[in-house]
Each structure stands twice: as structure tokens, then as C-alpha cells.
Length: 297
Image 1 (cartoon, rainbow, N blue to C red):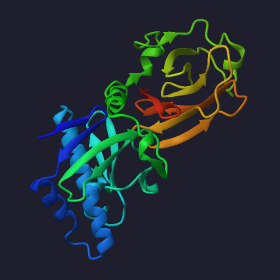
Image 2 (cartoon, rainbow, N blue to C red):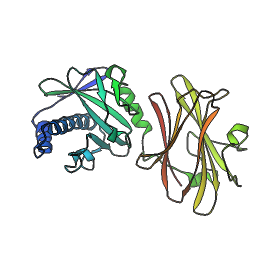
Image 3 (cartoon, rainbow, N blue to C red):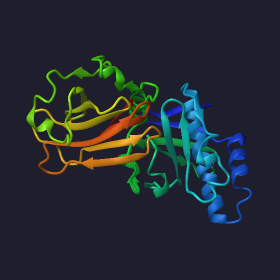
């Protein structure tokens, strides 16, 4: 029976079903080291999948690289898709380990990295916590709690896609404020190389633990099919703290462009164009907190 081992972790029993799944994945791998890696990765995914299923989330393991016998033989991967949320990476941790490791091939297309510690007999797995952004190594004591992971899933709903065509007729989504007149702050007007009229846009406050930032989107129709988009991040009445990231990603969460604030930046921004029906994601990241917004033209 699953139970909360502490306020910040979750314990999953690894019974016959879990080990049968792991054995079915590694049994045709001749290299012993690789076979062990696949076995542990599979147990980690099993544990996270069990945890999420108990909480009522719908998962799709079968579509992932960690379930594909061709791919997991060549990759150190433990991915798991949460339907309508995104893909998480499940990283195994041995009993005495103090540091979690994230392989480079898993650094893209994940909304979170969860760490799963096994006991010596491999009969039990403890989900320790998560980080939102990949690092080659992270001390396990620095992980974010599972409570915060569940809150982050609420912010990762891919089905809450914002249709920007509505913005062009003045219909903004909840949480966004219409800018009128647009570009009324001089430094926020910087960036458009081909400023055209009409221009419409919206602004949204992002509440980080120690501060608030603003995400601003400005839209300029170019043709009936193409729209110019200027995404900007700034802090009210001050310069940005160093290390704020603005990321443009495709609809699968793969990073396309990113920029990071320096010591004296008033704002960070990207200008790009999108065509009708194109989907993309804008993510604002600071520390271990991230705010993703999903859009469609």
C-alpha cells in the first residue's frame, strides 16, 4: 500500500509487477552495465507512474523513449508523459547517493525532473522531490518538494492554450490585462524592427517567491496568415535580477530560443513570427521556478 513517508516524499512498493516490467526491458541487453541502467530507469518510471496514477493523473508511458526497446538501449532515459501536462524525467538514486544526476540527452522537452531513491533490496522506492530545470548534478538536499511539483503541474496545463487570434479583436484571456495605449513605456517599445499598425498586446504578472515580474506580449499582424510577436519580461520600477530566463519553445516543450538577464538589464525580449494555427510556448524562469504559457495563433 502506498503511503506518505514524510510531508515531502512519497513511498512506492516495488512488488512483482514492477520487477517484471524492468526485466522485460533489460533481458535482451548483453552489456551488464547498460542492462542495470535500464533496469533502474524502468523501476524509477514505474514508481513515478504509480504515484501519479494514485493522484488521478493520466499517463502515457507507452509513447515514451523509456518504453521503446530500440531507444532505451542507446539512451540513459526515464521519461514519462503526463497527458495534457507534459513530459517528466524519472531519475533513479541509489541508497547511499547524496547527488542526483541528469544525463544530457534528457535536458530538453521535460517540465520536471523527479528523483527516486531505492532501498538496498529494490523492494521500495521513495520519490524525493524534483527540479524544474536540468543540471548535470544536484545535491538531493536541494530538491523542491512534491507539494511544489503538484502546484507546478497546475501551471503546466497544455490544454489551457491561449488563442492569440482573440487578442487581435480585443478578447484577452483571464489573468492578462489589455495594454491601451500599447507601448506606453519607452523601453518596452524597443525590439520591434518592423513596427506596424495595428498593434495589440497584453501583460501578465508572474509572482515569484521574492518578487513579481511582468510578461508582456505585443502582436503585429503582417499578413492574414502571419503575425509578428514581441515577448518581453521586466520588473516593475527596477532592473531585472540576474539570471531571469525568457524561453521560446515549440508545442512539445523543446527550447527554440532563450535569453538570460545580465547585471544591468531593464528587460529581456525576443521578437519572432508565427503563422496561423501554429502553437508555441513562452516560459519565464528564475531559479527553480518557471511560468509556462501556451499559445496558438
